Image (cartoon, rainbow, N blue to C red; front, side, top):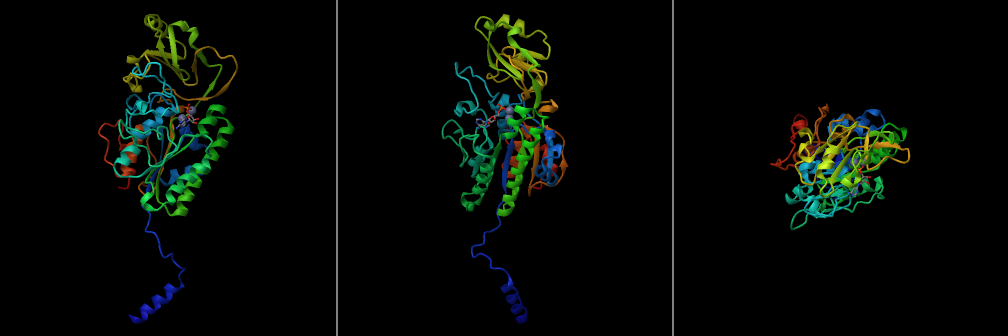
Length: 403
Ligand code: AMP
Ligand code: ZN
Ligand code: ZN
C-alpha cells in the first residue's frame, strides 16, 4: 500500500498544474437562437455545415410558423407557446380598439401591446432562473401589469450590433461566475431575412448570407466548447421566404374605392378597416371572388389559420396566394425579392428548427410541428412545469428528450 501511494504521488507530480480554484462542472444552459427568415429547406443546400453538424448530433424539422408568418407574431409565439391570435401580437403592424388612433409597430415596447401572453423569460425569472436576451422581439418590454419584468440582461434592439458582437456578448455572459450566470439565453440574427427580402430566397447572394450566418453558429459552438459550457441549443426561424415580383401585385384601389377604407397593413396579406358608414360597400367589394387573393370579415377567417378571435385583428382581412402581394395601389417601378406573411401551411413559409445538447438524443429529422410547441420544449429543458393554457405541447420532442 505504501509503495502504491508513493507511486501515485510521483505520477500526480508529473501532471500539469491544476488551478487552485478549479471550478466545479458547469450546469447546462439553454440557448434559444433565432435566425430570422431562415426557410426550412435552406438547411438542405449544403452551405451551412455548422447547422448541419448540430442537426446530425440532435434533431431537426421543418417547423410550421403560426399565422400570420411575420416576424413579431412568430417570435412571440415561440416564447409564449401561444398563436398570435392568443398572444396578442397579431401582426407586425396592428391596432387595438381600446387605443383608437394608435398603431403597434416593431420597436414599440409599451407593455400594453405585449401583456396578453407571458414570455418564457418572465416565467423563468419568476422561478428563480436567471435569463439574458441578446435581442428578441419583446425582450426589451417591462412585462406585466405592475412590477415590469425583463430578462436580467437585455439590450435595446440595434441592427448595427454585429453578429460577432452578439455571439461574444452571449459568451461573455457565460464567462461570469455561477451566481450571476444566465441559464436561459436568447440570441437573434437578422441578416438572412434581410438578404431574403432583398435578393429573394433562390439568389446566390442569399446562399452567401447563409454561409456567413452559419459561421456565427460555429463560433458560438466553439466558444461554448472552449468554456466547457454544456448547452442545449435550440436554433429556430420565425418563418420562411417566398419569391415575389412587381408583376404579381394586387392593387387594392382597383378593387374598392380608397374612400371606403383605411389600410392597416399590406404585403402578403392586407388588414383593412372600413371608413365609418361604409362597412356595407366595403364588404361588397372585398368579399366577392378575386384572382390570387381571398378576403374575409374577421369572424369568417378559416379556422385552420387560428386567427380572428382577437379584436386586434382588423375587421377585414385579405390573404394573397404565395408569391403575390397586396398593395394600396399598383407599383410604379419594377422590383423583385422575397416576402413572408402567407398561409402558415405553405412550404415556402416553413421555418428552421434544429436542437442539440446534453438533454437531446441524436434522433435525426422529426416530423413537422407547430412553432407553439417550442416554448413547451424550452420549459422541459429548464425543468419548468407545462403551462396550463398553452396552444402547443412537447409531444414532438418527447422521444428525443433525455430526461
Ligand atoms: P419583417 O418585417 O417581418 O421582415 O421583420 C424583420 C425585421 O425586424 C428585421 O429586419 C429586424 O431588423 C427587425 N427586428 C427584429 N427584432 C427587432 C426588435 N426587437 N425591434 C425592432 N425591430 C426588430
Ligand atoms: Zn422575420
Ligand atoms: Zn422579413
